[in-house]
Length: 241
Image (cartoon, rainbow, N blue to C red):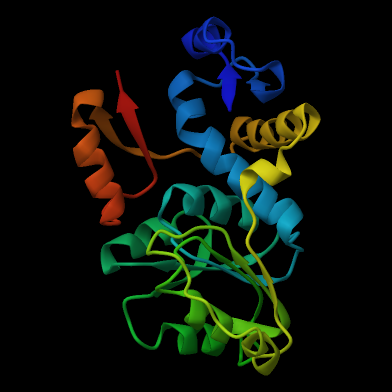
């Protein structure tokens, strides 16, 4: 995927990126904003609008609320009228998640986090969990779902989810499970551009603010990957030439 704005647009042209994989962004979207938001924001778009369309009045659970996708998605979900329960991995990230769309913030490092979600929802559970963490949170996420709830497992930050017996979904309330990926939601040029346009709209309107909290030089790529792997980062991380 590439995008056309400033020097990165020239890069796409110079390197013969296929036309149906190029996104045209409106004037006013700076290169750093595009780099920090395009992949993460388009992920948030398909999750909230198409994988499980969030409806006003619903209470949802979004993992890694202080991360790159989470900060965008939680702001966006609040705008759509949802009450957002966000999870974080440390007490230091609670304030950040609260300031970016989360009405409730739960620390997944605490053993009782899934019970806390049940308490917040009066025992009913949530209709959807968006989980980009994977192995560490998967089973707890299932415990947070209401009957016929939807488990959206879209990432493996903590490792891949181990194999499990499908009957588990039945025993926990006839749950639905999906493992989506951005590519399958942007298969055509129309889908790709439409997803990007929706993201640009919420950025330009101020509904979603893009947080770039870490910048590394290309020579520091190893340190950047180590920071991401340790889940020590918040918001977006950029590698600067």
